[in-house]
Image (cartoon, rainbow, N blue to C red; front, side, top):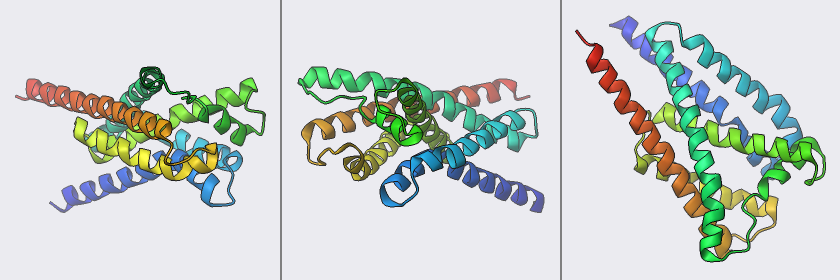
Length: 221
């Protein structure tokens, strides 16, 4: 019994550490706005090492004991569905803009992220590539974070998580992008985009959880 409790506690510690590591990309944006730590420092010296540690955790855990294997599986599933949800988010935003006749550029943040990371102009190819990579990694790691705390997913959990991130964006992006918080184009595009992101992520995690349960029942003696 004590061994089982120790394993459970270790699992919680691992999950908490992975949650923190996955959150470093978002924390880099927060630090850019509210602290003297620029993304040119946080991206290479915090976010990139954290990404490497998460990758090692996923690779090392796949062939280890059950607890480590399940832990790695959560990270992998979060990565997969976080990537799918981010692609859906990036496709949904220009559709929302076209539907409502907005003039907002849905991808204005990516070159700016790249500029803040590399110091190059927002029109530079390397800055644009770095910004898109950072944006994509943000979406992936936010997916990992939900998979760690709510592995069963569900669209409700996904939407709640997505709208929580939208609220954070409302607090930070006006300082980065020089947009108004009460700008209806910024609000509507962000809310609908994060709703789509959350639905795709939450339902993806739920689908994966159902498949795992079915596989477990099929393999049971």
